[in-house]
Image (cartoon, rainbow, N blue to C red; front, side):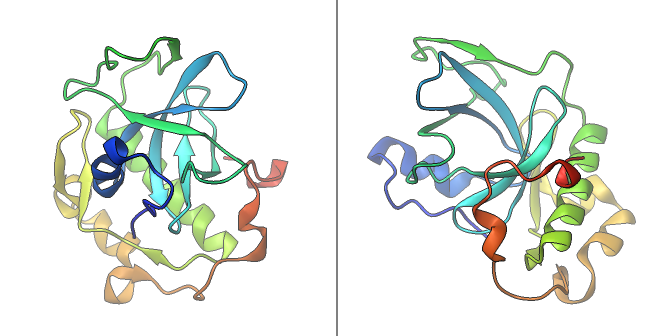
Length: 176
């Protein structure tokens, strides 16, 4: 599953195509004064992803940057997980290190939330590890991978996007 590049600036198209599981990004919201770092827990459809924030919140967010809801800009971190030079604003970032254990928990919890909301969960073959390097998913999860993948490499949930997927921040009971 990939995010749609429709409405994205020419410079961001390639980055959008490379977005994947556990990729760390910076999000800019209209009317805000800081960039917000987030970790992509799972891409739910071509517009939405489960994101994990520095406040330890995990929720469904529109990250397509083409809608009136959600962020209006998205940038990637540098290869060493640093901030790009041209931000022109401060960034609200993770204080603690994002370890492989954190990444695995965020992914597991994202899959649970997506299943609960009725998304068809496609488990990708690659994930970004704590250093920001794309690695095979099974090398990070080992034996746990089979439990996550289910039959046929995806979680056998109902197809389609639920009508409440438009929610930017789900109701209290949907937060982990």
